[in-house]
Length: 592
Image (tube, rainbow, N blue to C red):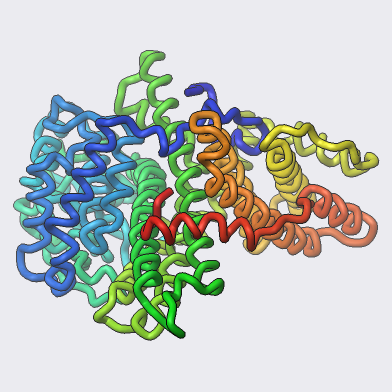
C-alpha cells in the first residue's frame, strides 16, 4: 500500500488500484473482530431494541459493560492501557458492524470516539494512565461536552467559563451544555470552556464525582430514542488544575481534530446500518407475495434494491480508501520519529477533506437506503411493528451529527483552498492547464481498449470539471466566495461524486486483479451505474455554478467544456442494475 498520498491530492493526482485498500482484503483476525461485533448485536441488542428505546434504567450502561468485557471498547486503545492496540482500519471495521445497532451504536461510538480519544491523544502521561484503562473496560463511561444553546456549528462561541481559584489549585467551571450523548450515565466529561477572557476554548477532564454537575431530564427525540441525551449544567464545579487537557486555548483544535475522526467513523457506522436495512428489504421482497409472485420479481422493487446496493458499495469503497490513507500517514509519521498520539492526530488532520466527503456521502447513502426500505415494505414499512420505522427515524440524525452536511460541504471546499493557499496542494497549475484545454480543439481519438479504460477517462475528466468550476469560482468571486454558499455546496457535490466515483472504480479494478473479471460481473455493473449517474450529478452542479458567476461567451465556453468533461457513452443502466440485483435476490441479503 502506498504511503505517499497526501490529503486532497485525489483531485490532481492519479491513484493506482494497487495502492488502495479494499474491504475484500480483510484478514482473518479482522474478520473475527467483525464477527464478534455482529454476535454482540445479535445476542444483546437486536432483540432488546424496545428496552433500549424506553431507556430502561441501567440497561445501556450494562450493555457498554458487556462490550467492555469483550474488549470492544478498547479496539484502538494501546495495549499498555488495557486495549487491543489495533490499527485505524480495524477500528473502522468494528464501527461499521456496530453501526447496525441503532441507539446502542450511538452510545458505543460516543464512548469510544469523542469520549475516550481526546484524553488518549491529548492527555499527558498521568491523565492517560488514570483514565484510559477504566474507559477501555467500561468501568467509567465517557461523554463530550462541546455544544451549547447558543453555539452549535459555531463551536468556539461557547460561553462556558473557567476561572482559577484563589489558591490556584482548581478551575471553577460554570456553564451549560446541550445535546450531550451518554450524558445521563457518564462518569467522565470532556468539557470545553474559555479560561477567563480567552478568545479560544480550552478543554478539561471533569469527573462526575467532582460535584457541581446537574442534568436536565432526558431529551425526547425523533429517533435514537435509546441514546441518553441530556443538558448538563456546571455550577461552580471544581476541576483540579492538573485536569486541564493539553495546553490552555488548545480546546478548539482538540474539538476540530476529534470531529475529523468522528466524521469518518460516522460514515462507517452509516454503511453498517445501510447494509442491515438493505438485507431486511431483500428478505421482505422475497417473502412478500403480490399478484401471485414475490415482489422481488418486479422491476420497480428490483431497481430500488440495486440502487441501495450500488450506493453502499461505492460509499464503502471511499470510506476504506480514506481509512487506509489515514493509517498509512500515521505509520509514516511514526517511522519518521513522531510520537504515536501526535502522529494519529496529524494523520486525521491530513485527510480531513476526505473525512468530510465520506461523512456527507455515507449519511446520505443511509438516508436513501432507509427511505427506499420503507417503500419496499409498503404499508408495513410505516408500521411500528416492522423494522423500517425505527431504522428510518434513527438514520435522520446522521446528517446533523458531527457537523451538519451543509457545514461539511463548505468545509470540503474551504479546506482544499486553504491547502492550496499554503502551498500544500498545487491546485492552480492543474486548473490553468484545464483552462488552456478549454481553448483547444477537443481530441476525438479512441481510448485504449483495456477493461476500465473508459471509466478511467471519465474520472480523469471529472477532475477537470471540478478544477475548471472551482478555479473559475475562486478567480471570479475572490474574497466573496466564502459567502457564496450555494456555489460552495455545488463545488463540494462535484468533489464528492468525483472522489466516490474514483474510489469505486479503484475498488473494482483491484478486485478484478485478484478474482478475475468473470467473478466480478455484479461489482463491475454497480461501478458503471455509479459513474454513469455521477456524470449527470457533476454536470448539474457545475452548470448551476457557472450560470451564476459567468456570462456571455465565457459562460458558453465553460458550459461546453463542462459537457465535454462529463460526457459518457450510452450505457444500459437498467441491464446493469438487473445484473447486480439478481445476485442480491438469490443470496437473500446484501452480499457485496
